[in-house]
Length: 180
Ligand code: IMP
Ligand code: MG
Image (cartoon, rainbow, N blue to C red; front, side, top):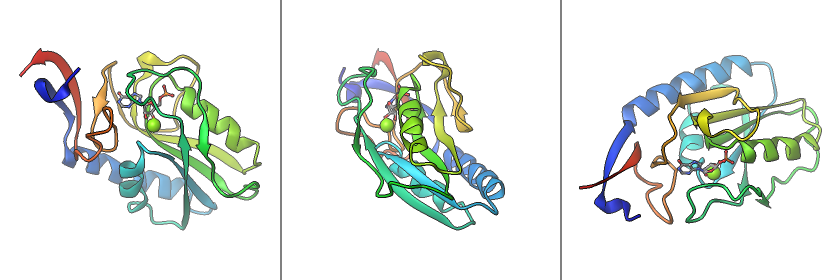
């Protein structure tokens, strides 16, 4: 699929996204006011969302990144999630962890990372995604914070890739089958 030649259906504009991210930031700030917040952002897809979100959070927050194995050029998960690069800490005692990802699809990535981080004994582990695609879920998982719930479409932009490209597009779009 050459998406340059397809119709791009804009699902969320730059402004809509930033308004919603602002709301999420306020909600997270209130919920973690007296807690030791540690945001673990899943690379690469969530780097744009995380950068905007943390700047809307007004409580002290530690930030680190995990790299999970990605879809690459495939449009759906192979089922096996791997942690390619972990956070530094072996021990998360006293931290309230919030995992941030771009999108929850099958749910396998979040489930895997949550299980992994729980072995480091944090005070709590919650999840935050910009986009949630519940129709595709392969297990029982509901993110704690959701920017937008979307139908079963492959989406691109605002950190989400198609192949090597399009992460830098400032809005979120879906690709339809018609040629433009
Ligand atoms: P899950 O493990 O199936 O929930 O998938 C999570 C990961 O798959 C996300 O972090 C994305 O990197 C990728 N992904 C899932 N759906 C899409 C999509 O529609 N566009 C781009 N990447 C996606
Ligand atoms: Mg990802």
